[in-house]
Amino acid sequence: MFSRNAEEPPIRLATWNCCRSSVAKTAEAVTALNASVTVVQEARRPAALPPGHLWMGSKPGNGIAVVPGAGFEVALGPVDPAAPWSILPVTVSGPIGLHLLMVWTRKEHEYDQGLDAALTTYASFLKAAPTVVIGDFNSNAIWDAPRRKTDFSRVAKRLADEFGLVSAYHAHSGETYGSESQATLYFMRKRARPYHIDYCFVPARWMENIRSVSVLDNPPWDALSDHRPLVVDLADRDL
Image 1: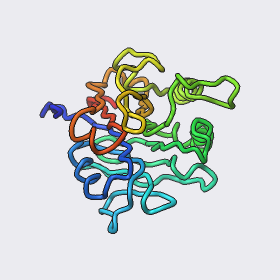
Image 2 (image 1 turned 45 degrees about the vertical axis):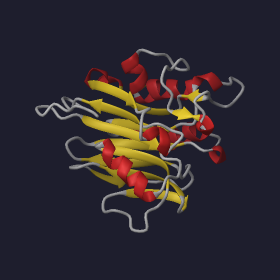
Image 3 (image 1 turned 30 degrees about the horizontal axis):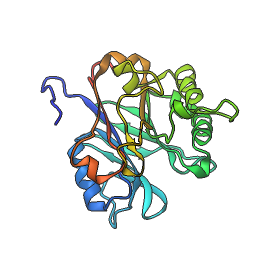
């Protein structure tokens, strides 16, 4: 599915909302992504959590998980119990080291407002190392509302201005927020209701390292979930 240069293996980052697919199907699908780090939302907790994997959630059938690839390790960062439980800091070690904020915004946290609050809570963590903010934002510029406390465009601007992060998809494609040609969600599994709501924000200085950004809208992904995986391949030079 993806080609890799043997002389320069890429760092692959992936995010996918599995729509509470079975543990077995989710595990098989994540393995097929062959990513360095995969963040999975709406994930069921396995009866026995595989070594090195992280899973957090308020209910066993609906949480957020981080799956490291070969050669990588993940560990939960300093969690603030007052922050949204579904937006969490993770440290990644391996061929490269980085900080990662895994995101699943939820209605109970007011979506963009919860993410904005988490950026404040974890600001020091995000600035302490090269950082990726990745996951299901449940948001897009088409729903911006200036009268709200915040919205997608203001969060994206904050990620750029305060943390130096850009959306890998938009940086690579040249598309603007709200005008995405590829959907990461088909609401209610209806092809007539496509939205782009899953993102991977990376340091702006990594832009030259982006080798490809893919939204996997093909079998088996179209049958497994209403969301599609977003996959970012990075050359690992000078990251």
